[in-house]
Length: 388
Ligand SMILES: Cc1cc2nc3c(=O)[nH]c(=O)nc-3n(C[C@H](O)[C@H](O)[C@H](O)COP(=O)(O)OP(=O)(O)OC[C@H]3O[C@@H](n4cnc5c(N)ncnc54)[C@H](O)[C@@H]3O)c2cc1C
Image (cartoon, rainbow, N blue to C red; front, top):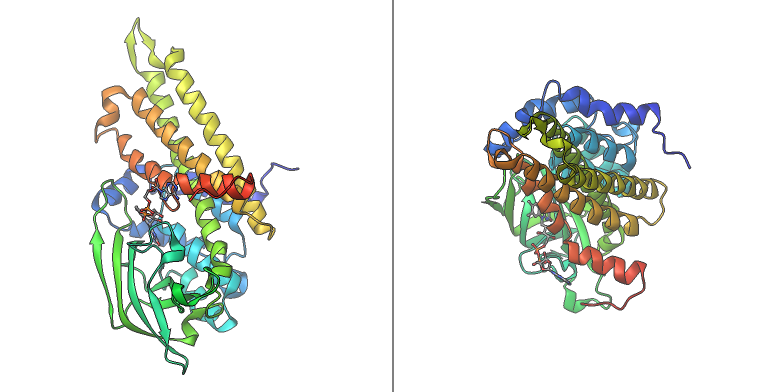
């Protein structure tokens, strides 16, 4: 076992330290408060070749894997610049395309994805099905001649407004007409400029650059060339994007947690309220911070293990779920402990600590809520009966 990063991995991990000298947390926060894409930061990341981390070099990418993508996200988030768009675009969509798309489809999307000319969003959640994706009702009906018409709605689709293409998980055969519940799913690359697509903004309660959208598909015409993988077999490859989603978001949470703790330590070393002693000298202040830091590092290790398993082609679901569970809880604990350490200042706009809470708290609920993650671990890892 070797816990050392390669030179290249270290460079990717430390990129966040370097870029944050130019685009720091306050820069990110400015965009988060406006709910706008931090364009200059994305341009720099693109120019530095990081959008295509998971894309083979033959298609303009860096030819790296999930581990490097995780390290990249964690390194940015360590510096208070967590980017949700890196989840839906470069990780979920480009990662799945790189792994499962036909040669034609790879040539169509990946080089443009790496240069930032083509932007992506990922759409699976539907208002009625919620976390029970098996029950989604959006459907792309075949005309029997290689064409499809997509109808239905998706909800909470991150950055649907700036995406050129949506990777849409939908049914091509209704649930009632399949023997096995996981049959009949198809993944399409949908051009967001197509006729029949409309969207409405879902305002989110905490500051975040990325916006969330409800997206409506009304007789949207698609062809077989838009299908990723095989018609009706989308579920077979779905977890090659859902596991990476859990892994990369673990990195976002551990990074944000570290950033909040670093800020808390600086504050605790400085702030004196009794006997001219810094509040950081009290165990009552130290222990929550130390516990949170330990939880962050444990979650970070599990995320790396999940990424390693994914890159090795091994089953990654168990580790990805555990990492996401641990990272969300550790991130929440870290930010909450930091808020407490800042006292009243923890609630001010000026100090910007409370701002981080919404993001880490989101990860207890999404992309898969804590309860469903624990259901998975209980049932599939530990052999307990299915509870729902
Ligand atoms: C900011 C944001 C960004 C998002 N981005 C995207 C995106 O880009 N693409 C996309 O497709 N989706 C996206 N989502 C959707 C997200 O994945 C879902 O909100 C999430 O999966 C939860 O689904 P739901 O909201 O329908 O909750 P529900 O399924 O309605 O569940 C509600 C609550 O019930 C409980 N619960 C449900 N089932 C069980 C059970 N079996 N056992 C115990 N408890 C249970 C859980 O506590 C859960 O939190 C995003 C959501 C948000 C808020």
